Image (cartoon, rainbow, N blue to C red; front, top):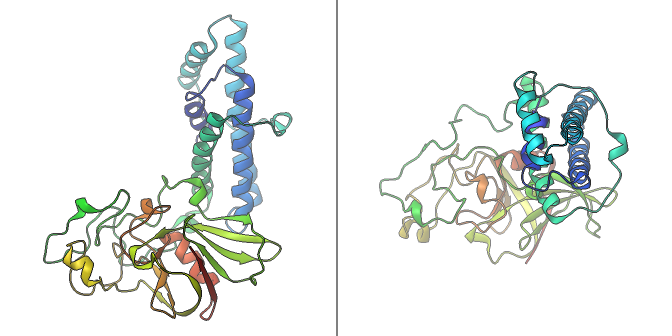
Length: 332
């Protein structure tokens, strides 16, 4: 169970914590995003797990508000008094005590720009909480294999020293494994269902390169949205394509240009952690591909290696949903 008290306390320290309406806006937005996460993963989060998460969030909010009320009653400075009350509480009882409810506080209100930024940060932590609430078997990475290595471990080296310093921020050199996902990936680039009206049939993949999103069309004007990075190989990719083949832990052949610039080793790099093609590959009929990545922090940005890149957790999910022959529409 995540420590929602600590998460919300950190968020409130970034703004005007003495403003009650501001605080409630943050609480309401956080609860709304947590509910969206629960609905987005019905097969992974049970009803009881969801209730426990919401109860823990409610309890944290009630505890924080009670500390503000105690501070106001004593006539102290709201923000400094709250910090003192918080330190006293942490010294005497657990931070994740459950119980309570705040249904009256969840009505929609305008969100200030600062509150929105804070709420997004809290929602990312809430998404991690949902993941950690799953059973030990479910928590195991869907891309784990006998080749798995700790994040950041160099698992492949070419004969020539690579120019890793020349790579853009978030990109990792071939052979360095950044993991199957990353907690620092922005909430907007995390896999989630969204409203999406289109004339394309269900099952179509739509790649919006400028916005760095991939959409898998679902029934009833819904799409699963994935964050992507666009590799240099696919900067000019556009139009209608078909999926011609699928592969698990594909091998990677760097282009001669990457080898000449010493950004990649010469020769074929075997599949596995640290490979820029990641855990899965959906090959397109023109030789381009949708695939995983060894650099999850590059999601949402232009990238050096490969084509349409997803974090490994997402590409495994997409791989399981899309058949060979599926339609892919790429927009510039």
